[in-house]
Length: 383
Ligand code: UD1
Ligand code: UDP
Image 1: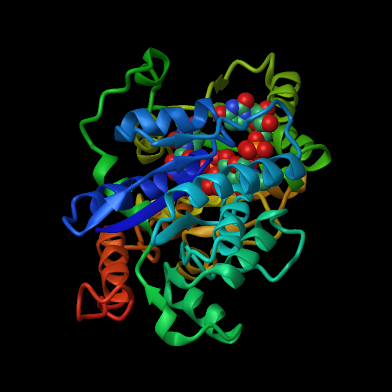
Image 2: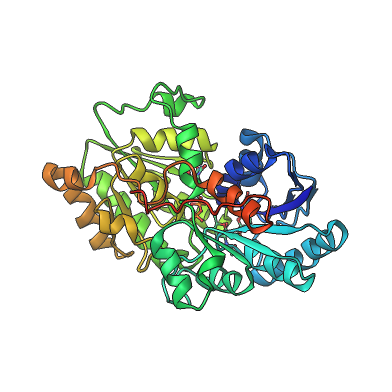
């Protein structure tokens, strides 16, 4: 039996690892031992509950206002110990969090191969996103198998000298999870969401949490959103507020009195993606939302200066607008009032996957361990 250890710790990693874990666990040749760092606690547990994943190990490292050093040290030591005990054949990590990087380093110290899911995304700016750009790059240095979601991500890895035979273009597992969860007939469990007037109001979905945005930039973002609802009476904003206390403090201070800005706690994934499917547009600094919203045909205005996900910008459904108050008001107002501009962006495209990424990654792992003679066909060559 091949012993595979997926390691993850935050909400987005869990969402994107869940379909892969299910696919791997269904293989007779594979035994899965899941370890979570719980760099996030409540937001991770929401996903574990939904996808019915019961980890064998849980480091429970989260602390209020944890520093990057605390996360990295806790994960390196805790995951290192588990890897030393379990000696898996492969450690699987996802994306660009501090859990991702520190777990890869722990595996390397034990000379255990690392599979990097969602490899090769780059902004080439060391501090943007911070610390994710370097987390992903350093993980790439340590990885043995690189699961690049798109041909562009593969190209970035090739340019950095990663051997072609170690790169597999698979699509992003985020699309696997999305297609399994979005449902046109979905009824919200949260009464406040069920009561939203999607017919007569333009519902804007806002999420913001990036470390480099907290402070002045987030002030600009939230002030802009407050101005937008005052300018456009047919709008309502829903803000699932990230549990980082710094985000909540700024959101409550600025939005506290606004009638048409609804702040809610982080939503369960199924509530969230079905809300996204019905909203008018998305304002966000999130990585994952830049992949999900295009698939649902929702225009996305990205509240960042850089993005490691340029494919949907090229496709025209995502626009990078930065964090300046006036610019956010201008771009959002244009989408609210100019039907042609809106239509141009509201086209469903799926540059990030076709729902079969988990299957390709599974096949690639079996191929690497010589349990399957065929390399999986590459995502993107077929589109
Ligand atoms: C982390 C990742 C980021 C990812 C984001 C997804 C790093 C350095 N950052 O950022 O790449 O985009 O997750 O959301 O890896 N908190 C809770 N409960 C939770 C989750 C967070 O209370 O369930 C609070 C805690 O006070 C914690 C703080 O949020 O200290 C920040 O969490 P942390 O994981 O350090 O950073 P994020 O900004 O969430
Ligand atoms: N998400 C969720 N509930 C929410 C907000 C987001 O389930 O209230 C999901 C969303 O669908 C996406 C992921 O969380 O899959 C994005 O996480 P986040 O924005 O925290 O991290 P990032 O993608 O920026 O790393």
